[in-house]
Image (cartoon, rainbow, N blue to C red; front, side):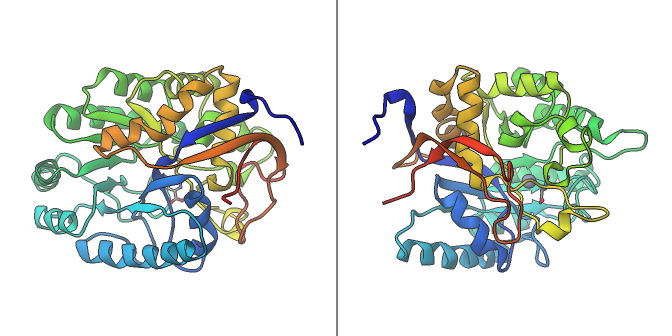
Length: 354
Ligand code: DOR
Ligand code: ZN
């Protein structure tokens, strides 16, 4: 028997992954089980196609769809994952739709500003009109979180500056809705982190594992690498340093939202390829690597399994997962999707359930 020391093994409370793209259709069968291996709950993004999740009816339909899949996995002896449902907030979302969606079980509303990412072609145009403010107020009243894709596409703004261009909107909303819980999703810049740090306790941010690893060089610096392309685009080294510092700092405003976003290989390797990185197959292993390198493995569990639950107002997950120090090579492809770090060696491995 191989001898193992404590530093070869980490046991963590099951994760809350507060930002997951599970999609619709056959791809779900390949992608959802990866998240279920380590997460007790997952916030499910509503930018699905052909049917976007916009109303209470959509929430019930999508959750049933997911639960059928998850129950099948449970029968096969795999862990259960609770999907935390969301709706997409568009210019035509009304307070009545908010109340209905909340009643149907939606925990949050997600805003995609128009045109900034995958499936945002009907995203929000107006953040300050009377109608949308009434909608945000309804969210505050019913206790629904506001999840923001924090980028804005405007003239003469480079893709790498879109998050910074959005921050005044975040400030403006946070000042007006002091009791609305707001999450700046997948924060990617130093200014984004600093803005969240200085806002009140109703404002937090999620951080992805790929933004803790990548800079823009990993997308366009050594040939175009479409499987690393995502929105917001990873930025400069300094931004990445600040993200690692925020994730490992023990500041409860920063927690895991992986933005695991699978796209079939042919949708990535083409002209106008889709943005999104499929991180679920490697997520706990790569996070352990990042936190270990920062000398902060002891802070990993708070980031993955405590701060998100506390911000959402949920009890902590029951159950644990275990990672062991054992090298493995990430598969080149899974169900037609190229995962993050494909073909590379990782040093932590998630123990399979017995
Ligand atoms: O890279 C991304 N992919 N960012 C998003 O905001 C959306 C996501 C997707 O749906 O693929
Ligand atoms: Zn996303």
